[in-house]
Image 1 (cartoon, rainbow, N blue to C red):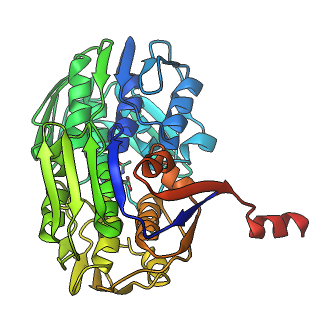
Image 2 (image 1 turned 90 degrees about the vertical axis):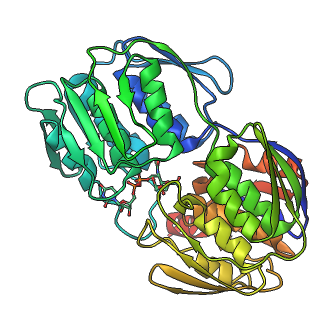
Length: 431
Ligand code: EPZ
């Protein structure tokens, strides 16, 4: 197993290029199953979630060929299997997109229940199932989700989502792209990756309108053809580097981003006294003096993203005064707080609210990454803390951050990844 060792307390300086968006890539790769032809997808992030999804497509019979480190050709023309085996599917949450894509293309799907980040609560998919059912599919949930279009092909329908769900919005869009007739998704999610998926599908011949608003119309077409598409930059990766500068100090230039996607994060950091200057596709982020307190409430886009909540909380833990963080999307996303308090943070969690009393400094400690963003928060905290920190379970971090070690080192951070033996595992093997 790998762990990160961080010598903290060094300000960050330099430039970093932001990779393709994980949460767009993990939808667009399964969406290639809908395409009868070769899709060339550019700006793919090199992260383990992408590797697993590409392996799944290969197992299903797709041709997958990397042209270079970021561009891949996927040919799903000869895919015939609709059964996605458990060993790979359970490794990531986004395997639920295979259900919508396979249903859309073949009218059937058999996918083992998706795994992925566990925030300590339930991650239901009832809204996905409700959408598929409205479109004429019969869905059975067990170890596997087995879905079958009663008439062999999905049928357009009106779907009103009871909660604003990124996954359900994207999954229903995929199931609807090749459906007979038109689908309307109301109370749809509006995240940049929703628009990216619609743009990808449209560039392959789909007819989707309204992505980025709360009403998406999908006019079913008979076939999608091959084409080329570049994935948008990762809003959360960029936000994580911004939070790192806020917490550890310094000034960095983020390259290859879409500043508009960053507005919800930029505004909060500016409120905390961080200087953020945007240009065409760059952001200059600089901390000047002590951070100021702020309240944060996470909400669906364009609100402050839940996937940035742990990282901004680390920065707030070093701000002057008391900040209130309210988690508005997930029931339980504060498991990392215990780790952070061991580094000296003063945070009290009550339900979905965290009261953060700013402290003057954090101290290095050995901490765990409980999930992807909790892990990113531990990295941010370790960079800001005085002394040495060790971060365990970094496989979670590597699911979503391309070359985080290389990028941080180029900004002057002292961070390295080393192999270690899981003592518990060794004990069990010996025992
Ligand atoms: C996506 O998860 C992201 N994952 C998550 O990012 C992100 O936190 C989340 O959207 C919200 O932005 C991927 O894109 C792979 P939701 P998703 O459906 O689609 C409730 C990361 O760190 N809900 O928008 O699974 C649900 O319980 C990951 O990169 C239902 O009740 O999230 C939650 O409270 C972690 N029924 C809320 O909606 C449903 O059928 C939003 O969930 C679906 C969701």
